[in-house]
Image (tube, rainbow, N blue to C red; front, side, top):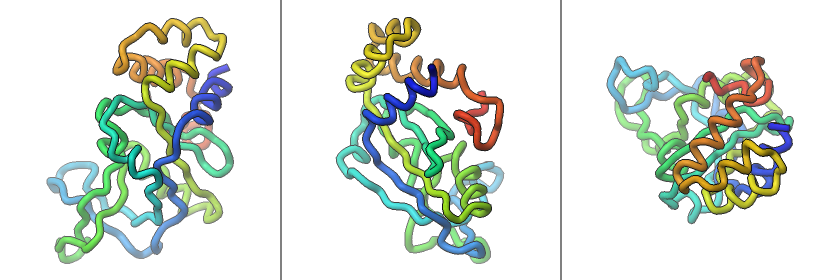
Length: 186
């Protein structure tokens, strides 16, 4: 049932990002954050396309989902300030010189390591990231016929996305790589 419900939410959501590969296995970059920050890297640069600029710029509470080209759901997350709060086009530094690179690179703390790893091992895989905002999410959840999800529909805009994420994560697979929401750690 959770997979069916997430499929319905995903189908109603809007695509905002596609990651289709790595620029080069040898090309690494660092995030421009403090050296001890675990998000610093080094990371491999991804080939990605931002889709739907109005959605990218929207600053409302949303649920976002990562699905691979094998149709597996890898991750579900929430942002209370829009997708670009979580899916950052991060200022990038050269790994050797620490000089700023001309272009930022896409980054998401919990997902990028996993995306990078799958792209390294299966060159035919790609990822689509979609978001759904509270009003649309409420409508989809109310049609699922699941009491737990119906109960969420009375919550505020911010709370409905937070509680939906918690509900989906509670039903995740224990397969930490390719299982249902396997990248969600808690």
